[in-house]
Image 1: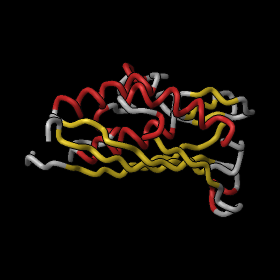
Image 2: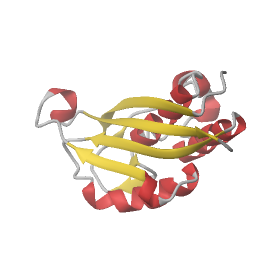
Image 3: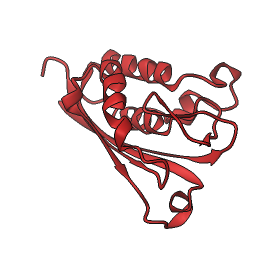
Length: 164
């Protein structure tokens, strides 16, 4: 890897809404009649952040690093996966400067949970809550997300070389 002072990463994830699963987004368990389908806890926001961090380092994506064919990651807490990836960021000589994210869901309304998500995510990322942006959006009833079949998330991260 070249010795760049700054690196930017972009992450994206989408999971189908299903019955019989807890809805966990940004580490917060949100009361809702459906949850996200996935091998782990399917935390769509954390997964997007993980992919953004891995992308900034030009490393493999979340599915390669934590494959859904590996039983070690069955029902895994995505925050623990995030911790492993943050350790990789630091091992490569970078720290996270800030993150900017979108959660896209027609339902449930997520704005009330954003302060709690920030409070949970900031320590894992080694950031102040002021450096963690989480926005909630809808799809205005368009596509699978707008038809309440899925929830998606996007994330952008800025990494800075330690000591630069």
